[in-house]
Image 1 (cartoon, helix red, strand yellow):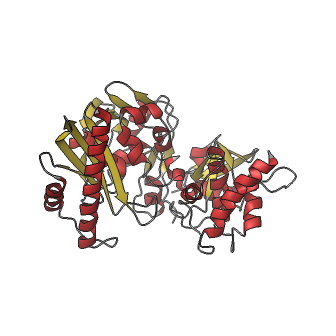
Image 2: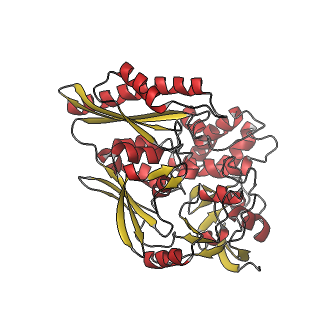
Image 3: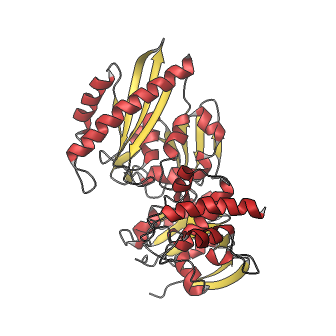
Length: 280
Length: 162
């Protein structure tokens, strides 16, 4: 239960960090470390070097504009959760962040780190996917923007190249007529969810005209299902067919399907009411 | 391969400790082995149990999920730093004593640090909020009831002492 030896680098600027990463082909980036350090301790990962970006300046911002919320790579979950303007611009952020592990973990763990860790059991990857957000990445070769739809390649696998650092995540603001909802079921408050659902609904004149639901802990990657034009009951059947929930040591397939059923209805309804409440 | 050793300055409970550690030394191990502060307990060592919780710049964090090299110059408070200079128990410590909030005591350092910070953010928690405050810490003895009572009692003691 102790990590294998590694070289430790603590660059003082982003350019130094990118240079260090490009020169060390077996290096990992350390930000909050709340997922990485357990993997090291259990020796599920043994990188030759860690590039600790905690001393890199100007990466801990949470900036709110009319377009949405920009979250820097060193902004801790707790900082994003406590940011009132961010919660106002995109209420799904605070709804989901309150379910991210425990407060103690949120004090250290970063939202951007959680996204590029690409765990299908985590809340923030599916939130980014549902909202159609994006991630800014940098490398010595230049910068690029990766849309959420192109970010999640497989279990714990993002499409970032080895020498790239995710510097910022962008969550689009809630637009007029839209509403959101979030719910999950876990054995204990703060544990990984057995199933979690995030919902985004748009209403016109009180009627639902667009609806999408994002699922965590159901498939290997965060998965968004479009249920526009379907009633909540039709949405449930459509989602179950699309996702085919599987069983594992935490829940049987039948139990997980039941959770999908219940949470789909709940979140669809909550997001619809949220949208109607904002427009009336 | 000889492992590179780093000189790290840890500020713990107001005292400065200069330690020489490999990069992979967990903060929890550095506090116990290198600083000799064995009040911080190591239970699961992968962030689940909460026993190793310390305050890092005032906020509770898992010391087993951090490397000592990353904690250079941060202000760390361990359970040893909660009582005041005359060894008067802090409100949370006194409440655990009053309410029998521990049995074997292994998990207690993590509860004490977590609740100390929790009551700073929310000085008058409801019972539900008290449960949420301690949801990240495991205790195998008490069944949590007396720990929840301790949180509420600690809030009372804080008010009485103010």
